[in-house]
Amino acid sequence: MGLTCPSKSRPRDRILDAARDMFRKFGIKGCGVDSIAEAAGTNKMTLYRHFGSKDELVAECLRDQARAVADKWAEFDAAYPDDPLSQLRAWVKMSATCDSRGCDLANAAIELPDEDHPARKVVEDFKRSQRDRLAGLCRRVGARDPEMLADTLSLLVEGARVSRQSVGPEGPCARFQRVAEAAIEASIGAA
Amino acid sequence: MGLTCPSKSRPRDRILDAARDMFRKFGIKGCGVDSIAEAAGTNKMTLYRHFGSKDELVAECLRDQARAVADKWAEFDAAYPDDPLSQLRAWVKMSATCDSRGCDLANAAIELPDEDHPARKVVEDFKRSQRDRLAGLCRRVGARDPEMLADTLSLLVEGARVSRQSVGPEGPCARFQRVAEAAIEASIGAA
DNA sequence: AGGGGAAGTTACTGACCGGTCACACCCGCG
DNA sequence: CGCGGGTGTGACCGGTCAGTAACTTCCCCT
Image (cartoon, rainbow over all chains, first blue to last red; front, top):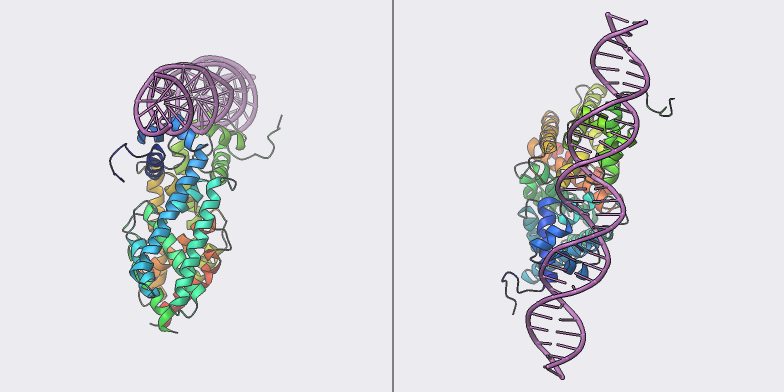
């Protein structure tokens, strides 16, 4: 069964986990495939047998995290069925209390300027679907201008995540939740 | 024999310019000192005589850009003396129409997770002073909650810049200016 | 004219990079 | 038993990295 134990799981999953951790700690370009394999308790050869290249490993890693976020949305939907406002608030709260290293997808886009990198498409698709999901909620919540609110929230959460990395958690991002909730309230209050 | 015509200026300035350009194009970790020196029409040795290390070059580069932004603020102050609202709007407009590769300072913070990197302090100081300047303007403009407005605008502009890199200029950042101006208006309208 | 500092040149170090190879191993399955 | 696929091992490739040394050449200033 799904033992969380160290190395009994499949190498592929361990590599993915280790890569995510190391990319976060040192940046994508900041760690080599050898160290990733070692951190995963395996070796470079096995890594290359599962992922054709480092670039592909990065892309798959990001796909994995995109899936995790999709699961979060599903959780919110299950927790507050037919209650888009609560879902929206839960999402804001989650975004406010998440890890200090920001959004790995956005970070990857910044760290990999090459438009042809396989990770770029993953990031773009993810961010777009993220905004669409948000816009759907804004519509269902009865916002005066749902598209506008969706973009506002998108910008705020993106800004909060990058601000936390550059000035720390005591900076502008400390007020993110209040600002975001005020934006929601203003948009549905004036309907 | 003057092959290197395009460069009459001092090597140090050329290196700084070339480094800025290349860091933007390929990322900081994405280009070596040798290529930077070559792009600057000089050589690695001269680069190392002016900047002790690549890390120091990065830091100096960012200090340079921080100075450029400070100059922008001075311009706004000169263009609209004693008119904080116009200054604020000019800053919003500038932030909306700036280059597509985002804020180099914030990008550096994301690309260099090591807290001890000399560039990190530069970024943190810059972002903090940036927010303070903004807060000062928000106060003078008579905003209901100046600190809140300053943080809102900080988050929005930071978000717009990173969003432009991950989803492109047609994404949420396209509505940045409208959102930001609405936030300003809401904050001074309700005074 | 000449002296000195700044700049250019070449070559080098040692480490590390992404990626590949050949080969030994282990373990479940028939 | 033997077979085969997934895994581990270590060596290896060519290239690039940051950083240094020793020497030459240029140009500005007195």
